[in-house]
Amino acid sequence: MKILQKPMGLYQTNCYIVQVDGKDLIIDPGVGATKWVLEHAKNPIAILNTHGHFDHVWSNKELQEKLNVPLYIPIDDAFMLANDPFSQGTPVSIPDVLVEDERMHEIDGIRFSYLHFAGHTPGCSGILIGENLFSGDFLFKGSIGRVDFPYSDPQAMKKSIKKFLRYTENWKIYPGHGGTTTSHEERKTLPRWLEYI
Image (cartoon, rainbow, N blue to C red; front, side, top):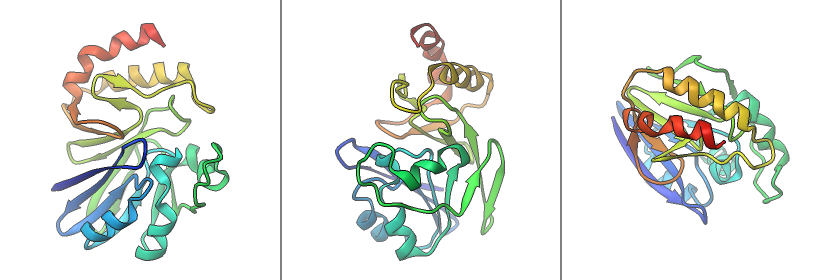
């Protein structure tokens, strides 16, 4: 497995290309991601959104049209693709698969699952591919996603943190913003956020 990463747009939102057995999964193609994705994803098989915020989904529509691959998004965030809730002018995209928590998916022999960690958004999720968790805006290196946006829910974030702490695996974590970390590292500091939310 090879993982390519590039921060996109004003908010430096990480777009990832996960290459497995000569096939590419595109994760969170944000503002201006199309050119980079087309240059580096030689055999794309799907676009995966961790959640519905505009800086993670901006290039969905353009890539769907150019690549003709299915688009996956957590079911509780699908509404954001259609109605541009933050009035950013986000191009409307139509998901092909509405993802539910911990449901295993397989495309061309590549398996992945979504782990639901609501709070930042209703459907905010991590995407687990092998031992790698693409955490979107749920979890960052030393921090968590904001819960003061429209559709955010501080109490849901607390539940999601507790849920994450129940996992014992040591995943490598690729966040929606910033650098990589591991689940073991984040377990050391995550409990303190329960007091601050």
